[in-house]
Amino acid sequence: MSQSQFVTALRQQLSTGQPDTIRQGLALLEGLNSPSVTEALLSGVTLSASGHLRVPSDAPDHLQGPLRWWVALGLLRISGALNGVERLSLRGRRLLDLSPLEGLSSLRSVALGFTDDIPPEPLTPLCSLPALSHLELHTYGFPCDLSLLPTLALCSCALVGHWELADIAHIGQCVSLQALELEGLNRVTDISALSALTNLHTLRLTELHELGDDLSPLRALERLERLELGGAYGITELSALAGLQLLELSLVDLELSDISALSALPALKRLEMRETLIGRHHFSHALLDNPEDIAALIEEARH
Image (cartoon, rainbow, N blue to C red; front, side, top):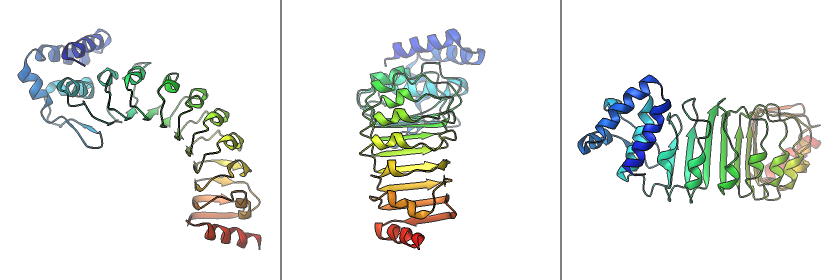
């Protein structure tokens, strides 16, 4: 992104912005004509090794208010400071759009947090990131169009927050995924779309309160080795998970006859349970990190 492209994007934002945004943006447009102003704006704006964007509390007025994070990111892009960056964590950073990210060829990992400041189609610039392999999307009820996810060739993806999303068909089309986290998708009742993710080896499903007891779609995931379940109730069948090696349960109610039902998981090497109910047995916290301990627990239940 050149300075002229940044100015163009800023003008587009001002055309539909709120009064405070317009006043801040007009002052910024005037200031960008002076290299010394641009240098002063960038003073103190940093990007940590883990990709976290920081703006000092005593930053110039141009870096305060509604444009704060978007302007800081755009100025870093203009200065070339984002060239070669591989990770960006923008959670909690109120961005007007993602245009400052366009074309960053080294960017492999992006974490975003949605607020009502982001337009209805905020993800489009991600299509111009050829190295992107990991994406985290955090939202709290804000609608997001996920239709382009299958075009990104992601290896790992996390959807976290409180999603107004009932259909995960687009996620099921991301066939390159090896790791997937779904948290807070409270309207999802059917995970059959996940059966197409045959490269998946790690899956985390938490706070999917309408999920029900049907895990059978996971039977098709022959490479699945690790599963984390949280906030799940009424599960009565584990045979779909026969290939699991690591299982973590938190706030889970397994309506099984007893612990011996875990014998349906013959490959299990590690089992961790927090506030988990299996039959009549309650586990506040239990960690079994070898097959021998798991087998002993099952054998004890049988007697």
